[in-house]
Length: 50
Image (tube, rainbow, N blue to C red; front, top):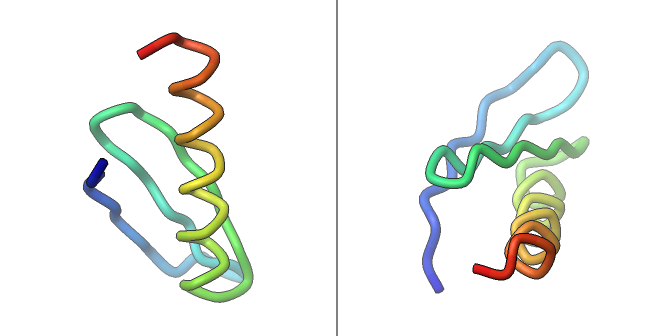
């Protein structure tokens, strides 16, 4: 499954957003933020039963 991912740099961390599901995560690097977002999206889909 492909999801749209937006990554922005915050003051101390990167913020990753999946606008289709309104799920947000963060990390100290872009890769970490995207990895954390992927995990958050997987949990969201599991919980919501999508």
